[in-house]
Image (cartoon, rainbow, N blue to C red; front, side, top):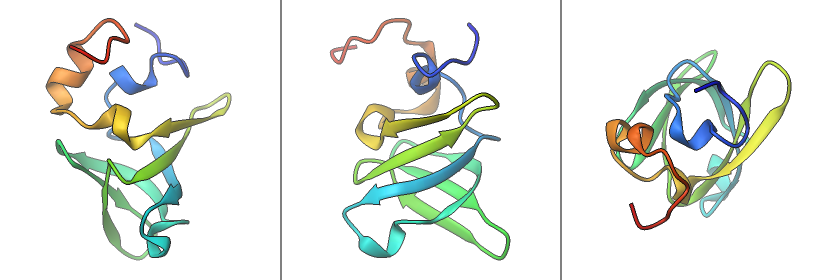
Length: 94
């Protein structure tokens, strides 16, 4: 399955450039870097000078694809990475 804006929530996120564009914690807004690790509840971003752990459920992320920037609500990413990537539909009930 090719990486497109529609399929991004079902893809592996490690290695993608990412920025926090909205969050319940105002200090998290503007954090950017490369996704180096993903757990059920967190994305770990490595920036130029440090590593941040950002909760998925309270943030909106902008992922930089080669052709465009895609905004994803973190609530859509809350799941074990292996489970999230094996889902083939957009059903919220899977």
